[in-house]
Amino acid sequence: MNTDKHFKVDFFRPEDAEGITALFRGVYGDGYPIRLFYDPQAIKSANETGEYYSIVARNAAGMVIGVEHLFRSAPFKNLYEAGAGLVSKEYRNQGVNKLLMAFVYDTLVPGNGGIEGTFGESVCNHIYMHKEVMARRHIETSLEVALMPAEAYDAERSATGRVAALGVFRCYKPKPHRIFLPKAYEEVLRFIYSGLDDQREIIVSDAGLPDAGSSELKIQIFDFARVARIAVHRAAADFESRLDELESEALGRNVVVFQIWLKLGQAWVGAVTDRLRDRGYFLGGALPRWFDDDGLLLQKLLCPPDFEGIKLLTDRSHQMLEIIKQDWSRAKSQIA
Image 1 (spheres, rainbow, N blue to C red):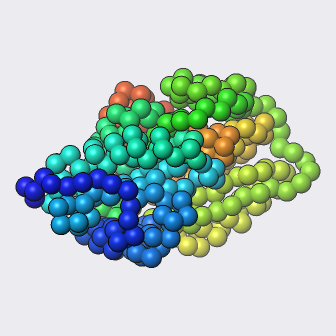
Image 2: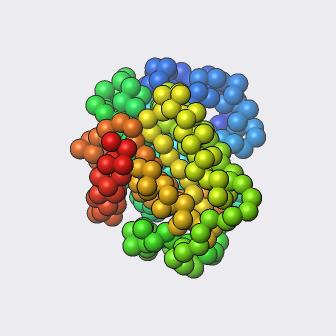
Image 3: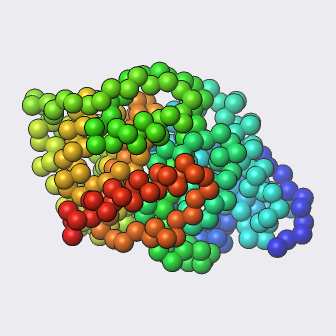
């Protein structure tokens, strides 16, 4: 632990890029799945375009000793993810992370009219980030039970199995709108939405899939994490055949975690959910403003989840975990 408590938190400067890269290498080695953080020029470019906002902590010598980010990862460009934050081992337990988070939410976000909401994926091999985001008025809405491989934390030695991530959300610009809840998850989704402070008109989904047109699905595969994320922008009668193609592609790249994002603004969401449940998918939770309208996260695992290793802070998050564990138990019999 470094006893020098002289550090300052500020906006990113181009000369910080090399320091951010060095920080990620020092903490994660070469194991962090977002490869941008190993490319100083890419970090500079992302900050220039607004894809990323890097907030840095520098010591008295100007060295980057901590960083926190807001960045675009959802389909809706005005919803930003808060994450990819870390502090040098020598400066931990000195309040660096708390000041980084304070700068993000008290200085960066209020001064940026293009940020309508923020969300985070707080890793669950500890509760520190969960505690910080709850202090910043986020609400838990989802749980990805096996998002990250244990190898990503080899340098930290803080995980023995795949690491879960708790999804949290905060609204800055309310947008009242209509959502459709799949009957299978109506009760738990009403529980999740009861914690939000912006309004929804809630209707139970009972429509079938459209006969006309074709499905529109887009896939992202994260090879290191062995995770595939599939966004369903439109579903039609060919939905399952199209999904078969994408799942086959992902299996060919050794994916073991499948995530699907559905649009809760579409009346067909219940019909698609039922088909996915039959294919071994289970609940992940709600994704407010994900497509501008809300999203629903479903997930399927071809690996064992480490439920015992999931560390959570609040009663609400523990209740979500128990519901998701039960749904996983139902789903695993269909892919056994």
